[in-house]
Image (cartoon, rainbow, N blue to C red; front, side, top):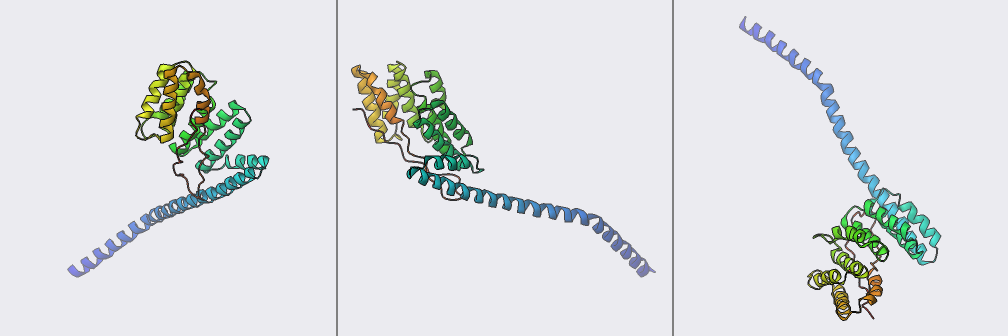
Length: 254
């Protein structure tokens, strides 16, 4: 009799387990399906980003070639398309190129707007700060000093890639606003900065000499020369974070 009871109990236990398994099966299958969907979604999004970056890279390069060949309208058309790309890096680069063309046309307000859009779209400080610095330089001889200081001060913080150039721009902005003492203070910091390029130190020393000699008004031309940042760096297809551009080397005062 004991064996019979054990056998019945085992059967009941097996039925209970089978029932629990059948109830859990839809949940298990659902979780597995959700995991597969998540994996394929991430993979699909990565593939989409790679394809969009490659497409933007081709269009950006074609625009550069078109501009070099004198086909400005075609370059503008291509860069406008890239500026609408999901690729944040190429979008930022294209907006800076369009801003540079507007600046060459002496349309500063539109140029500044495009530079500011490029800064917003940028995926990192390398591109973002380059766009912000271009915007500040475009406004160097027209905007109030306090506005320029508000634009440049964040770029001068530790860890930002163009902090020396931003300090240089602020020095010129103060000088052009008549604040020779404040300008000299900025140039002194540049001469003592370990991360300043030789060109930046030379320009700072030249500006300090002009201030000390009372000839600071002639620095305006130097300020405009110092505004020349290198062209945005090219990105390889699929690359989202370009390498740091070289330090700009503007000519010293004549």
